[in-house]
Image (cartoon, rainbow, N blue to C red; front, side, top):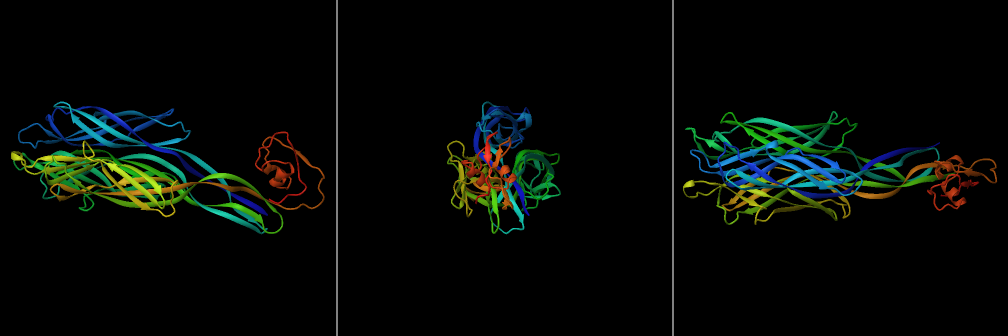
Length: 538
C-alpha cells in the first residue's frame, strides 16, 4: 500500500501598495440664524461613508464630509461671541473624484482617510474650504498551491518535510454602525446653553469570534465644549465636559459582522468616526449620535506540512512529481501599542494659555518600513489646540486656537520602532492602526504636552519559491519478462506522470530513454515514446 493525501493552501500576494492625495475645494454658507463671521478659530471634519467604483484603470469616489467649525462671531448681546457650526451629509462637503490605478491585472483594495481640513473666510457669511484626502491602494491576487501533506505506506520510506505558517484570506469588508446616548452634565458643571465643539474617540477596542460572528467592542469617549447658561438666562462663558473610561462616562459600543466560518479566524480591523451630532432639549444633558466605520479583515492562519523529498528505504523506487509553488509565509503576527509624546510650544503671536478646552488631531498619515529585526513606523499629523487665553482687555478670557502643521508651523511628526526578530528588508508588512484619544497636558503658560496612544496589528510575510511534491508513487520491479520494445503514442492530455503510472516506471526513466530535456517537458500529441524496460533511479 502506498497512498498520498493532498492539501491545498490559498494565500494572497500583495502586488502593489501606495497612497495618493485627493484634493476637494468649495464654498459653504453660514446658517441664517448664526451671526456673521469675524474669525475662524478651529475646524475639523469627519468623512462619512464613501463609495468607490473601479472602471478600467480608475477608481471613482463619491461621498460626503461633515465639517465642524468653531468661529468668533460679530458682536451679539448677552451671548458668548464664540459659535460652533456643523455642515453634515449632503449639506456638507460633497466629495467626487477619481484616482488612477496601475495597469496590474489584480484585485484592488482601497481606503480613504481625511488628512487636512482648511477653512478660510471669504465674506461675512461665506467660507472657502480646502480638504486633502489620502487614498490608500493595494493590489493583490490569490495564490493557490497544492502539495502532498501525508503518505500512508507499509514500505519503509525516508521523508523530508517543510513546515510553513500561512494566512489564507477569508473576508475583507466595510461596516458602519450608529450609536447614540443621552449624557448628563456632571456637577459642578454649569448648565448648557449651546454647543461649540464635540469630538468622539473609539478607545480600548478588542475583537473576538463567537457563534459565526466577529464582535468588535470597546468604548466611545466624548469631549464637549459648550457655552454655559447662567441663572438669569444669559450666557456666562465656556465650559468643557469629558465622558471617559476614567470617569465612568464612556459609552460601550459593539460592532458585529455575520460570517459563517467553520473555525475561529485571525481578526484585523481599523475603526474611525464618520459623523458626530449633538442635540439638547434640557440644559442639564445632551444627546450624542455617532456613526462608526470599520474595515475588517479575516484570515485563517495555519501551520502547513508539505513534503519536499521522499525516497524508498528498501525495495523499490519513489517517483516524485514536483511543481514550483509560490508561498506567502507568515513571519510575524503581533499586536503592539505605542505612545507618541510631543511638547508643543505656542507660536509667538498667540496669547498665553489659561485653560485647555480641546485638542484636535487629524487622522495621521503613517508609513512603515522593514529593517533587520525591526519594523520602523513614521507618521505626521496636524494638531489644533483650542484654549482660553489670558485676559485681554475688557473681553476677559478669550477663546483662541494654535495649530501645528498649518501655515508656517511645522508638521507634527512622530515615529517608533518595533523589535521583530527574524524580520528582514524585502519582506512585506501590513499594519492596521487604531489611534486612541489624544490628551493635552499643560506644562506652562506657553507649552503643552501631547500624549497620543496607538494600537497596531502587524502582519509580516515573505514570498518563497519552493519545489514541493504534488504527487508520488512507489514503483516496484515487475515479475516476468517484458517486451523487448514497447512504444506509446502520446494522446491529448497526457503527461510524463500519467504515462509513467500506466507502465510502472518513472518520469526520469521516460525522459532519459527518450532523450527528453526535462521530466516536466510538455509532450506533443502523436509523439511516439519508448517505454523503458526498468525504472532508473531518481
